[in-house]
Amino acid sequence: MSISKNIENLTASLPKKVTLVAVSKTKPIEAIMEAYNTGLRIFGENKIQEMVSKWETMPKDIQWHMIGHVQTNKVKYMASFVSLIHAIDSIKLLKEVNKQAKKHDRVIDCLLQVKIAKEESKFGLDEEVVVEILNTPEYASLKNISIVGLMGMATFTDNKKQIINEFNYLQTIYNRLKLKHPHFRTLSMGMSADYPLAIKQGSTMVRVGSAIFGSREY
Ligand SMILES: *Cc1c(COP(=O)(O)O)cnc(C)c1O
Image 1 (cartoon, protein in one colour):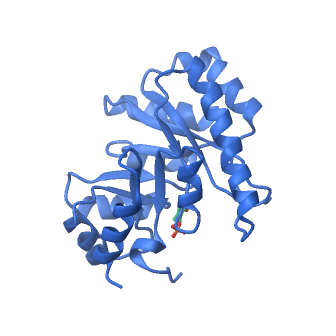
Image 2 (cartoon, protein in one colour):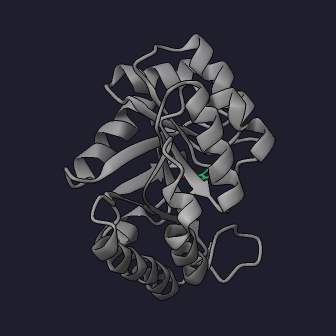
């Protein structure tokens, strides 16, 4: 199937209030332009260098989301343009984003990545650490970042019950935090294989790659 047909089917199935991030990592400019020409403006990448080179060549009304693990020393390359960083996992990284955002006189929106999967390989913070970061006076002093919600990745499994439980757990944390942080507006969860389950558990933003662009070759 074609990219535009995939997008048509996908967007028809998404509730209006759910934001679609088209995950374009490893995909060439031509494929991303096909998605752009259907009207999509939000693209997600997981490597900073790749995102920077695509940003340089592509239309400037694209909002670029960094969805992958971020190394502190690479924040500077994306600070002038990145629209949302999904996977913040330390106060140290948050401080660096703040420092680089300040140089460009911007406020960069960020999500804290919560570890919800049982797999050892997945990055993310435990709930206690999320609360700790949000309560630290140091966070309050960072004027050039704004934490607008949470992100999570479920275990890679066929066990639907487990995936639902993990998304439900993240939704619970999100709703609890939202009481103290009413400006929270983004719960980023759900990928090609599990986004319908994520939406049922309150996801407001899905990150979909292969269901749009086809499978990836590395
Ligand atoms: C690659 C990636 C996705 C998209 O995965 P698909 O299964 O291709 O939809 C979503 N989120 C993150 C963090 C990713 O790295």
